[in-house]
Structures are given as structure tokens and as C-alpha cells.
Length: 273
Image (cartoon, rainbow, N blue to C red; front, side, top):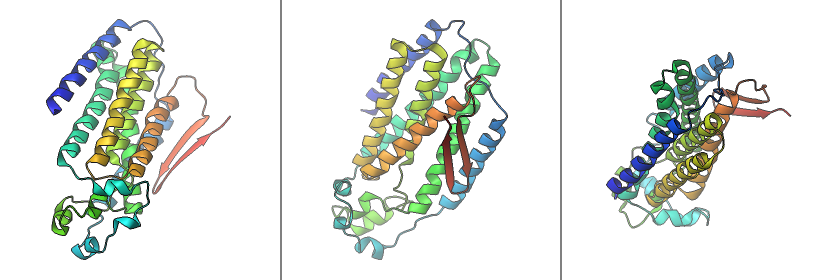
């Protein structure tokens, strides 16, 4: 199954790379690095480092805590996820997330690198790194603050001992990092591709395929029993917003109508009209 998924995605990826070559015109490159990148980049890295350090070793759980859990305490919308548990679906979510992230980085940087457009490659690479640092930091900090137990901990089809050793971070359910990563990559890829080449059948294909793969990642995380539906919904919203807004902030000639300020325990978005 995983080999089949990879074969399909590699075919689509090859088509997207070919499209970059077919659509390579003299359209002005739409992005530029700005002074704000010093703060955006350093703030993103700081946010990520702080979140990762706080998340390390976070959320240990005891057997007594597991025995005291009752799935009826979970809201009705999320409760069905407490019956899920599948290592195979977890593996599928890893593959689909990695594919969309790799595709985003490759499709947005490889064509300009191949044509020797070093400054364009650097600009997009910095943008991608900033988006991922902000997303990662926001994910880690939220997981620490929420400390939400994962749904499989409520699954009585597993023994308490099995639930105890199933994952190293049992209190990191909200929000889904896999989903946030996949949607950050999907939105970034689609936005950059559309801005560079313009709206077309190809850009529609990029939006549809990348977001579908990100959605599949979300579905797989719920089926695996490691996230509730609300975890992946929140992760999708955060990831898409970051992946879309970072390219907007780097558009040439754009005003500072959109501002993102990252700091310890917060990410602030402001819009000016």
C-alpha cells in the first residue's frame, strides 16, 4: 500500500517539476527578502527552540491515570476517535506528511536552482524555513499548554499496559503536528507555485493534490488513534494560515498590511485595511 502511494506521488511530483519547466517564462519573480526577515526568522527559530525544549519529556502519564480515564468524559464529536488504534495508519500518516513536505521544498526551489537563479532559490528556501520554524514552535507550545491526552489512552480494546507504552508523548494530542506540517507545506507549495507561474490548470492541480494529501494525513492521524478530529481541524487551520501568509509577507511591493509577530507562548496576526 505504501509503495503504491509513493509511486502515485512520485508520478505527480514528476509532472509538477515538468510543469515548472513548461511554465518557465519571463514573469517577474514575485518575492523578495526584507528587513523584517531578521525578526521573522530569528523569532521563528526562537519560538521553535523554546517550544522544543519545553516539549522534551513533557506529558508523562502513569498507569493509575490511564485506569481512571473514561471515554464518556470526551465530547461527543471527538468520542468516536477513542476507539481507534492502528500502527499501519500511523505509518501512512508519516509517509503522506513527508511526501507533501518534500514535494513543497523540491517543487518550489529545484527549478530556480536548475536555472542558476541562486537568489530566487535562497529567497524561497528562507521563506520555507521561516514558515516551518513558526509552525513547529506554535505546535510545540500549544501541545505543552493544552496537555491533552491522546484518544488511544481511552481505548479499552487495549490493555492499560499497552496504552502506557504506546507513545512517548501521551499528553500531546492538541493540536496535530503532522497535520499542521502537511498543511503548511501544501499551502506554501500552492501559493508559491501560483504566484510564480500565475493561475492555470497546473496551479489548480497543485492546490487540489497538495491539499488532498494534507487532508489524507489528517484522516490517517485520527484513524491511527493518536488524534481527535478537533486536533486535526486546528492543526489544519494553523498550518494553512502560516503556509499561506509567509509568502504573502514576502511579495514585492506589498505594504505591511499583514503582520505576524512571534514570541514566547504567542503568535499574533494583524491585518490593516
